[in-house]
Length: 429
Image 1 (cartoon, rainbow, N blue to C red):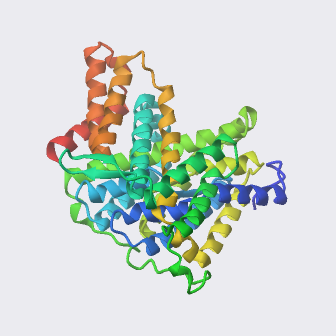
Image 2: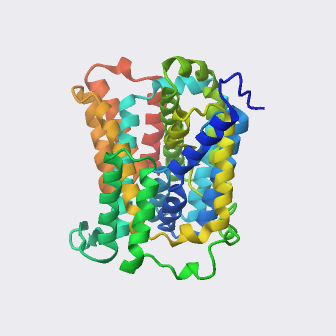
Image 3: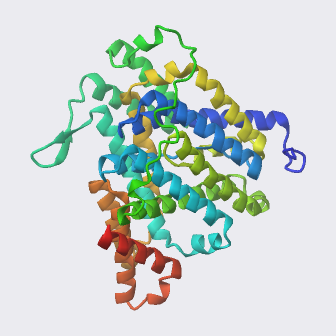
C-alpha cells in the first residue's frame, strides 16, 4: 500500500519516524484547547475535537498523498480564529462556518490548475508579513493567558503583571526552561517544557490536580457542543467574505511553507523526486480544513514538526499513519492534557511565535515598496489583533506603492484580484 521499497524505506524506519513526529507535535493537544477556550469554546470538547481533527486530517494525508506529514490545527490559524470571536464580533458557530467555507474554497483551488499560478504570483513580502504578524499574535496569547501581561484600561494597553509569584512566575520559569532546552538542542523541547512546567506548577498550586482523582484513563469528552456547529447567517455580509479570504490566504501559504520546508529536510535531490506529490498534498491539506471545521476546531495545516520524522527517515504514509494511531491512544488519557495550566503552555506559544517571526529575516528591507506594506501589516496585526483588516490595508498599500513608484508591472493579476476583494471588503464590510 505504501510502496516502502520504491521509497527506499522500511517499516521500522517509518514507525520510529512516526513516533518522532508525534513527540514533536504532541503539545498541540495542550495548546489548541487552551487557545480556543479564549473564544468561549469548552476546553474539554475542543481537546477531543483537536485530537480527532489530527487523526482525520493526517489519515487523509496518509492515504491521499502517501506522504510522511502530520496535519493538525495550525498555530496562528487558531489565534486568528479566536480573534474572529473576541475582536470581530462573530459567534463561534459563525467563525466555524467561515473556516468551513474557506476549506471548501481551498479544496476547489487545490483541484484547480490555477493553484500553481496563485502560489507563484502572491508577493513573498505579503507571506512574510502575515507569518510574522501571527507570530506576535500567538506570543501575545501566551503572555496574556499566563498573566505576564495584564490589561491597563486607562491607556487601552498592557502592563507587566506580577511575575514573582503564582501563574506568571510559572510561565516565566517555563519560558526559561524551554529556551535553555532549545539552546542545548534537546529534542522535543516544546513538549518537555510544557511537561516540566506543569510538574513544577503542582507544589506552586498552579497546576490543578483535582481532575486526576477520578483516574487518568477515561473515555474522551463529547464534542457535541461544537460538532457541525455552523451558522450561515453572516454569509451575505462583506465582512464575512473578507474573513474567508484571509483564511484561504493563510491556509494556502501555511501549507505551501510547510511542504517546501519538509521537502527541503529530505535533501535537494530526494526532494525533487517528491515534488510531484505537491498537488496531492494540497488536496489532503484542504480536505483536512473542512474536516476540522466539521469536528469543531480551527483550520488544520501540515505541521513543520513533521520534519522530525522526515529527518528520521520517514518517507511514506506509514509514518503519518503511526502519528494518527498515537494521537488516537491519547484520547483515552484526556485528564492528563486537560490538567495542564495556561502558564505551562505559555512557553510553547512564545517560542512558536518566535519561530514565525523569524521569517522577517527574508524581507527585502532595501526595497521600500516591499518592506513598508509588510511592516504595516505586522504592526497592525500586533496592535489590533485583526488579521483580515490588517492584511487588507497592507495589501492595498502594496499596490499603491508599486503604482506610484512606476513599477505596476510587478503587480500580478492575483494581487490585483485579491486587492480588489480586500478593497470591497473594507468599503462594504
